[in-house]
Length: 103
Image (cartoon, rainbow, N blue to C red; front, side, top):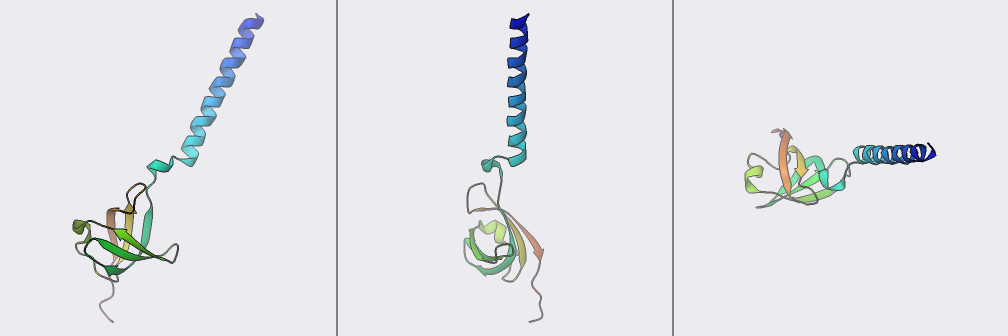
């Protein structure tokens, strides 16, 4: 009887520890699954990079980008850029607002 009770307690403790580990992983996420998102204004464009004024950090960020993602962008456009995981390469560029034509 005592032996069955001990096995039950050890099994229960093991299941509780697994549940806590799983919930901690869901709460904090894994670093390799999160992509960085930059929202800001395009300051400068070159052949394969964009310099963006980041709204959150108020700094200028230079991002590597494929030429097909740059089509339709102009300096002064408001953009949201999704970077690849653990990289400085743009995965997706969303044009939020065009620069004003009145200067």
